[in-house]
Length: 469
Image (cartoon, rainbow, N blue to C red; front, side, top):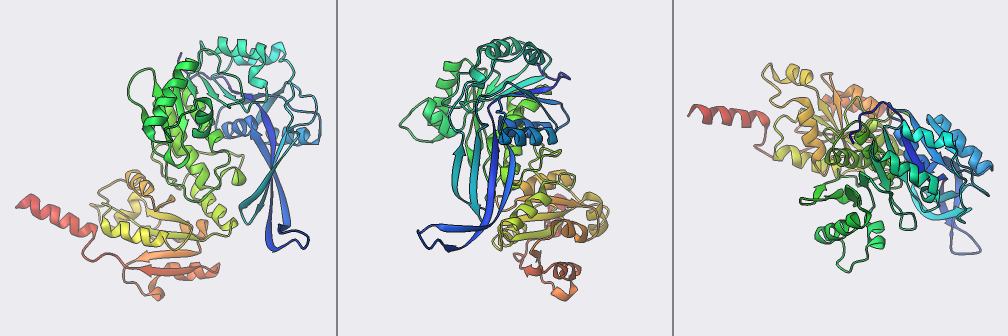
């Protein structure tokens, strides 16, 4: 029943063509009190099971998608996008047009959504060669959007057989089919859970856990993880208390596609032999980073790295830079702060909270161990860089962490291009080497006060004094 096989990750489900029509609004229409969207840019991407497959393909494993597409321009465009993302499509065929979900947005905010070709049509039956790929899978994700692929009888028989050998993850839909026997993990969100198991007790954790247990027993799945947006996820299994995995803070960002990111990450973790608890923890961190970086509207279908280990977005992970770019693109203000943050204390926290209040996201430029050692002496840092990054990333006011090895964060700031760089302490702006760099792209360096009497050096001295007394 363990994963860790070398086969492909197979996604089975309902795929769409998702389009964002992004523009600006400066006036209302003369004939009706509705906004006029101008300067429209049409961005297309895979949606539904297609997005799950594309996100999974950004890792190192081969990804196959079993889905039903029409023979129409939307279907042709979706095939191109999937191929560009490295996904091998096994097309069941769909009579009629390929479904499209079109969002009209202004300045990064949604105005309305239009669903095209929304009539549910019966997909074609899978060929024997399509069913055979399931037997070679390292794990299978069923991405059910209620349009019939997961209800196909021959596919269901194959999924039941495959689930005896490898992890099967089921991302359900209230209008979709019930999971097949042997599912390792089902991943409804709160709204789906409420429709599948109606309850009058609201969204308190105790009520969510009770409904999740009922649904797990109804479906006879090994584990059920309820995704709860900014609250993270709640996991129930056959025995034991519910496991709650908190989400990283993601105040800004588009939540569209977060569920697909969650399910794809959890499936990949199980394919590599991970436990359900570890897979959900990794999936929550990955989905949080995905939303913070702008969600599906900013998705880059090239290799992505999960921030699951510590929750921090470090320099080898492009997410901190992507987050800054996404916030800029939405017209928001990017704020950066810098420091060693060795033994995080109240002064640090007050400084970072003040910096975050200046804009729409805060990226902390963190001195690496070698950089800290050069600045603070051979006995520093007391806390290694990855631990310092993890602690910073856990703060509600911090959206991402960018690690740098140089003596100053100039190179990191050049990558991030923030609008503001907030420095803590009594500095004259003329003495800050960052000030001139920020000015080169129209940014501004500012200083913020530290709380009096708070410093890592003072903490270390006090600890030594007490140890000697």
